[in-house]
Image (cartoon, rainbow, N blue to C red):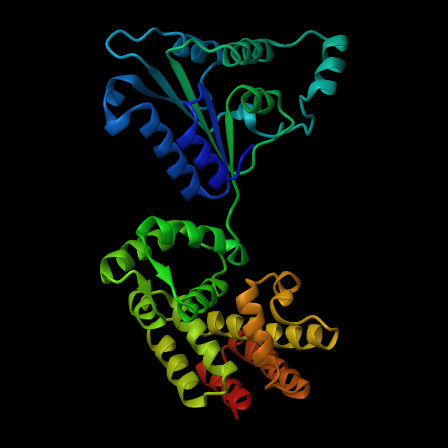
Amino acid sequence: MLKYGPFMAALRKESPKHVYLLTGEEHHYIEKAKAAILERLFPAGEGMRDALEEAPGDLDGDALIALLETVPFFVPKHVVLVQESPMFREKKSGAADGEEAEEKAAKGKKKDGRDKKEERLLHLLADMPDYAHVIFVCSGKADKRRKAYKTVEAVGAVLDADAVRPWEIGDWLAGKLAEIHKVFDREAHEYFMGAVSMMHEVSLAHLDKEFEKLALYTEEKRIGKKELAEVFSGLPEVSSFAMMDAVSEKDLKKALTLLRRQTSNGVYAPVLLALMVRHVRQLWQAKLLMTQGVRGKALGPAMKLNPFIAEKIGRASTKFPEPLLKQAMLALIDADYLLKTGRGGAELLEHVVISLCG
């Protein structure tokens, strides 16, 4: 089982495997890996039209065996793409079919027809014909206890495409910048990390498109904060980060301008409220951690943030006395109640911003 980076590196260096399993929560990584495998099997797409066949995940085991054993006539390979096979899912009964469970089942009762078909299929996967390749795609978490998973891991390659959390984006960023032949200066790096830290879920597919724009925006290799902000200005998280950054700097005029811009652009007050609550909590958390001796980039793991962002929040927290943060949090709680009961709007958030920046 390999994470995305090592999986792709191995794919570039090694001969293509006959069996692949692409699983995980990050659909973007799965699609990129699938495209890369097909590129290795069919350079420039040559022969893929005649050699690639897609099969549903619920295809009968014997039918899939017949498909994999079909000898190609006009092309040297036969590749089958299987979507969402139940062989890799956790059994609804909760009983895994690991080695111990299978031994007990074999002693107690005869396997049913479906199990026998799966056994025959797994036997084929362990000794595939030279011309045959199969790619299993299983979105979400696969059950590593299943014998199917263990078989593919032993004879082929498994991609574990975990969803990327905001504080884990650094490796992806380094790879993406290398891919488009750009580098960020320190300010641009902090700005990007800050914008990503505002995201509830990181969409790599969306970020990919933004970086494609960035690659075309300037011929300069070094990207500064100004260029990055101009290209990424359409992302709501960028404006949210800029607003929180202005609050941290106690820049009242800028913070109110950005708040009003977001509300006029259709960002709902409850969304902005949630972001502001999180920011005040982070300032408070950083302040408490620093009183315990946790400082600088060491704040990152404790706060589950990128170290650069955590360090910046730590510096900003020194500007806010604890009573002020407590007062702001109580005001935000009141604002939440009034928003939910329809008795207030964005003006409540303005009041909190004024109190924090005042």
